[in-house]
Each structure stands twice: as C-alpha cells, then as structure tokens.
Length: 301
Image (cartoon, rainbow, N blue to C red):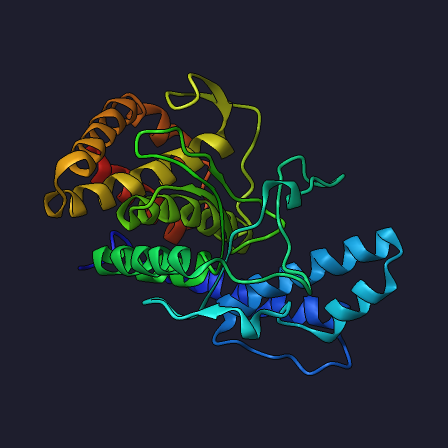
C-alpha cells in the first residue's frame, strides 16, 4: 500500500549523515564506526552513545564513559530483532530504570552494557506490529524513526496507553502496549511521526514562533504552534493507518479501533482554519506540503 506522503525526505537524510559524523568526532574520533545497516539506524544509536557518554562523564563513571566511546553502536549489534523495516532494538526496561536528567524532565532509557532484549513474546508482537505498519504504507517512516523500541507497561485493550519520544534520543520510542500488534503499530506510527517532524524541522531550519497559540482539541487547551503542528501531524497519521487496517479486524479490536477513529475525526474537524494559519510558519515547501497533505487526507476519512 502506498505511503500517505513521501516520508523519505532528503533534508532529513542529510541531517542524519551529518549528525552521525559530528557525534562520532566527539565520542570516538579514533574508533572506527560500526554501522548496523543504514544512516537512520546509526543516527539513532549515535544519540544513545552521545547521551550515555555525557551522563557517564557528569557522574565521573570512567568505565561507562569508556564503554560508550568504544561502542559506537551502543552495544546494539547483539540485540537486533529482524523486522519488515530492518533490524530493530527492542527492549522492555523496568520503569525504575527510566531516569530523568537535568536536560529532560521526561523519563527515558539509554542502551547500556547490561541492556538485554525484550522477552521473545514481546519481540514477536513488535515484529508483527512493524510488519502491519509497513504493509499499510508506513515502512519508510518506521525504518528511519522507530529504531529503538522501549516497551513499558503491559495493559489491556481500552486502557489509557502512555507513549512518548524525547528530542535528545531521535529514533527511540517509548510505548505502553497491549497484546495486539495492530494497536502497537498505531502507536509506533504516532511516535515515529513525532520523531520525523522533529528531524524535519531541524533539517529545514524552520523556526516556529511561540508568539501565537492555537486551540488543541487533544489537550483541550491552547498550545504553541510547535505542539499544535505536531498533534495535527501525528494523530492524522494514526487515523490514516486505522482507516486502512479497520476492515481487516473484528470483535473487540474492531470496536476499539472504530471508536478511536470516530473520536479522532471529531477532534480533528475543528482544526482546519488554525492548521492553515499555523502552516504559514513552515517556510520549507517540501515540509509544508507533507504536513498539509496528511492533515487533508485525515479530514477526508
């Protein structure tokens, strides 16, 4: 199935290559890089190395610092799970292993010497989720922007699922999960979408002013343009995915996804005028057209 838009975006691809080289010069100038597969994967892992080395240095942990500088893949080589979009690092850290830092109030997880793969059953569900997303047009998105998957709390269908990304670890996603890969694929797409847009804004040097705010129906409050545009990109991506997969589901899952799509239609419907105004802040034509196209496709569902 065709992608909703061209997720392969040349400015982002250039950003990945340039940032890998810069990080490698900082963290391991005498160590040969160890590419896992492509620039997007190396880009994600390089940020684990950068963050880990900085954290180790701040704590005075010379052994851990040396490990990061000696392992430009953050030790991922023996933790890879084959998926439809390429090898992924799938872990299931305990919530107590998700620290906060002075630079991030949001919990996060870094690949470390003691990191291990998630249990086989979770890796199997995750691999199925990547496959489902890929077959519905989101292969390029997940290939480049959902490289490290941190599966958090196991929940039941219908429970509130928390998920997030942080800008310091692009390509890494943090997700609660249920046992169904169709739902996991939806949430992977949502968070990968946030990673994509962060990279795209950086790569195109688009500066979004905080001077103007827009009402977000998802948060039920006004938000700066940056957050509003993120919501008007990530939620429509999940709507498009849900609409594509819905007819191939049944029972409780079908009812759950139908209710989700109906809810998102209602929330998105009132954003048209504000979205058009917010898009005026996006100066890059390629990025502007992608954000506009996904929003318009979701409105038509």
